[in-house]
Amino acid sequence: MAKDFLVGIDAGTSAVKTAIFDLDGNIISLSRRPVSIEIPRPGWAEQNMDSVWETVRDTIREVLSKSRVSPSDITGIGISGQGDGCRLIDKQLRPVRASILWIDGRAGEIVTRWQKEGADSRGFKISGSAIFAGTAAAIIKWLEKNEPDNLKRSCHFLFAKDWIKLKLTGQISTDESDASRGPINLEKRCYSDKLFEIFQITPYRQIFPQILPSAKLSGEITRQAAEETGLRKGTPVIAGMIDVVAMPIALGVVHHGQAYAIVGTTCFNAVLADQLILESKSVGMSLAYPLSGKFIRAMPSMAGTPNLDWFVRECCLEDKREAKKRGEDFYALLEGKISKIPVGSEGVIYHPYLNPGGERAPFVKPSARAQFFGISLEHNRGHLLRAVYEGVALSMLDCFNHIPVEIQEIRLTGGGAKSKLWCEIFADATGKTIKTFRGTELGAMGAALVAGVAVGIYPNLIEAVEKTVQIEKEYPPNLLHHRKYLQIYELYQQMREHLWEDWDLREKIIS
View 1 (cartoon, rainbow, N blue to C red):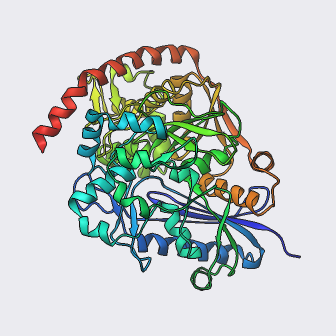
View 2 (view 1 turned 45 degrees about the vertical axis):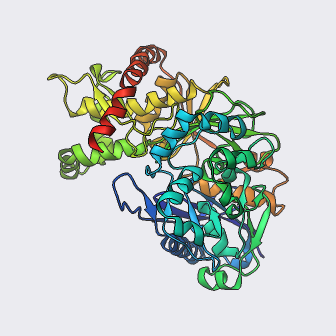
View 3 (view 1 turned 180 degrees about the vertical axis):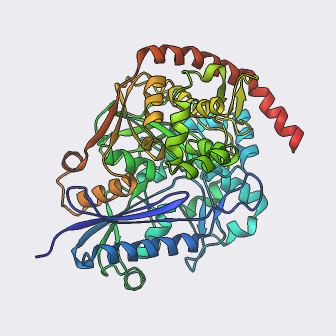
């Protein structure tokens, strides 16, 4: 007897994940493959669009092969993907150039100019989002000056998941959540001619795609896509959503005031609200949610786990050797050592502004950079490492403090949620209970659940999450530790303010 299954595809910044889910939200089969990020110049970040599609194609074939699920039993397909950036295709529906990613910093000077001219603050009143170097408007403006021929050849602008959707269905569209990162009147969920004017990109208005609701069916698997992937021709594909909207669905975020954080490539901190929130002004982003009248208000810092990855790569070779020699898990060894260091890393403070594009929340500063503060002869590598963990947690506190919605708990996902120690530090720093959830590929799961609603498997999104979402662990805050972190946070903020002009001076010196 045939059984219904759903496919979720999550095309992230560094990896593609494709999963087949049953109707209870269980993963039947999973494929995860890396995608490379090209760095043609310092501060730039690009991806080969064909390579990304080939990786998606291969993951689909793999999950079908591993699961032995019949393609005819797959009822719907949902897609999520990394946000922002710029993907351009020509009239033959071929990439004009490599995609420019959201972490790319080449348009930093343009953003700084818009800030000084007040364009960013004027635009924020319409879009609910601040501009940073990796946004579509800034990148298109950079291309206009530096690669005008490529813009002239471009017929369509796409977000990450929309390129995958085009390859699967032959259709060009985006959804309301990804479009929220474009020149959009968010309250009306449509493009804003005024924003195109403010950012001086009106000549490129025609390349932006049609906007559909996230749960709307946007096409079907074509014959060619069926041959390439093994999926059944005619299988419904939904409009999809940006990954940071797909994940909270799989965390059960469906009510006003529910907060979540995604500690991955970025540290994305957000709250679901019943209305569009325009505070704090000209900072953060707002996103349409696949529930009527609901919006995400987010403060997404530019770097989450890459702070830890960088420190481990550059400073922990000795610990890797030790873990291998002792036959222990490397991160368990590291966290065992730093768990013995007191809260506050005995005076070492770290700002996690590591991304080449600077910072975008809870402030926008393309020249912002990371730094350690307070190091003396009494400190060792362990103090610096714990300060990195704490610096990301203090960034989370900083971001939630700039969202004017009262929250009781934070639902956590991403690579950082796998660390018990980091979850405890997040709880202590924010003073909120941290909850983690069953499942690892929540972007793919959220996309699959919305697909299930679109094809009629679930009556609505609320019932879909009630049926599938399960809490795994809870981490209540230690209030003594929280009071200590609040003291550190005050200094953390003051340091940032003192460094504001110094970051700009540094950039001038090295340019």
